[in-house]
Figure (cartoon, rainbow, N blue to C red):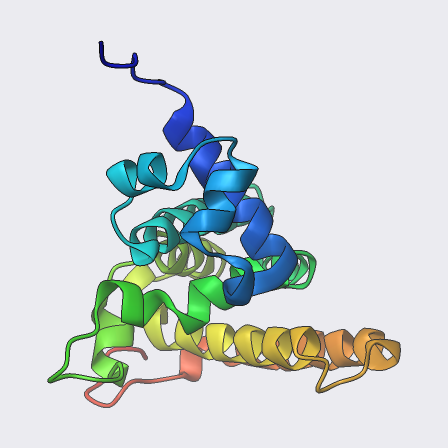
Amino acid sequence: MARPRDPNLEDRILKAARRLWRKEGQNGLTLRAVARVARTNTPAVYRRFPHRDDILRALLQQTKQEVFQQLTTASSVEDACERYLDFALSHPHEYELYYLHEYELFFSSPSKQGVTLDQLINKRRPAVEFIKGKLAAKMGGKPDDYTLTTLALWALLHGTAMLLTAKTVQPDYATEMRAACRAALQTILRDARNISLAGGQET
């Protein structure tokens, strides 16, 4: 007689995988370890997630939703940027998964490597669209007027997050690094209406 299907097992597997990823990053995430932490066996994990990358994709989607939720509760663009950095610094392995593995998990192919600037600009991402909308509400115009400005903000925040999470900038100087990031952010926002894409996408 077949054992009844556990309706909560998939959730337990993902919670176990997240605990392992948060603690050890990619080196600690094996299907055997996931099965042990989820209190099941490896075949049960394989039946629901045939490949390790399937678990990583599910974790990445959860992380993207969490980042978006953090941003959407922000009162301003500046607040959203602070929340973005807070998330990256408090969830360094999830942040690594989000930005270092997204392409290989969802978009890579043997014949095509890397993301072009056009792909970054034209791909509709909820977090990007939210920031563009916030900028338009604050400064006037249409959200798409602020595509390049949003890309500039992302580059600034991602660079700051990577420097701090990788400890390239030592923790003792994290306060100064974030202050420098805020100053650069204010400069970008002051010039937001003057930033232009080739072809006049922003004016």
